[in-house]
Each structure stands twice: as C-alpha cells, then as structure tokens.
Image (cartoon, rainbow, N blue to C red; front, side, top):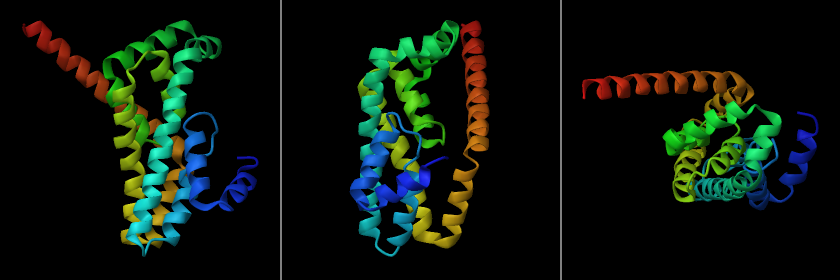
Amino acid sequence: MIGEEYILDFFNQFGPFALALLSFTEAIIQPIPPDVMFLPMAYEERDSPSVLLWLWTIVTVSSVMGAVIGHTIGKRYGTKLLDRFGKPHHRDRLESLFERYGTLGMFIAAVSPLPYKVFGWIAGASDMKLQPFILAGIFGRGLRFGLEALLIYLYGDAAMDAVQWLLDHEIIMAVVLLAALATFLWWLNGKTSTTSDAV
C-alpha cells in the first residue's frame, strides 16, 4: 500500500500508544491492519509473557473501542453510504443477514482478515444491538490477536513467517472464509427448512 511504510515509521516512534491508535482507527476508517505493528512488537517481547499479555490487551480493547465508533457511524450514515456505493437490495440483504446471524457474523468478521470496520458500519446500519456487537468484537478480536501472540510466544520465527504469509495473502483468506460462511449459512438454512417442514 502506498505510504504504509511512512505511516508505520511515524507510529513506531510512540510504542504501545501508537499500537492503540492504529488499532482504534483501523476499526473506524483507515486501511492498515494493526497486525503489521502488533506482530513485530509481540515478536520483540516474545520472552516476556506479561508484556505480550499487555500488548494483546491494548490491541484488542482499542480495536473494539474503535468498532463502537464505527457502529455509531453506521447507525447514523451507514444506510446512505451503502445505498450510495451499493444497490438498495444489497443493503437489504446484508441487513437481513445481520438480523439473523448478527453476533455470529460479527464474531467471524472480528477473527477474520475481512475489513472489520465495514462490518461495524453494516452492523450499525442494520441496528444491531451494541452489547452483542461488543461481545462478538471482544471474543473475536481477542481470539485473533491472542492466537498470533501465542504462536509467536511458542514458535518464534516460524510463527512470525506463517502469520506474515497469511497477512500477505489475506484476500485469498477472505475469499476462503466467505465461501466457508456461505456454505455454513446454506447448510443452516437447509436444516431450518427441514425442521419446519417436519413440524
């Protein structure tokens, strides 16, 4: 991404505060994922579990706090934005998915390399309640960043290489995750239809 190195160089001067700021703003608007700063910091502190836990807490909590702002933006402007940049029937479909699978959908978005902020906007636009939205974010983001920290703590360089590969191929990962989610929802809908037909 153009300018990503300059932005990260600027943020790197401020340590954990910069990690919090990057994570917070990524969940609202900006495109650089916090992993690109969290991973090197976690790698440097891999021999100190207490510092790793502190960094994990910072990146998780700030990401969820930013997502709450994203949810608010979505609640206020999301419908207009989605209608402007998409088609009304796409918005209706996304909103109905969030009404039906909201918490699960947010959890998957929080764990996955999919843009978390977009799901925050959609959740706000579809009036998803804030409490399950926050809980899904805490568990999903906590799991994502926690797994990265744990793997780096246990496996060091090998984990760093593997996680970096995943980040470099996040588009492929996103497509795989979306396909898996679509398959799961299709299976769940089929099961629900079969149950209701039996009754």
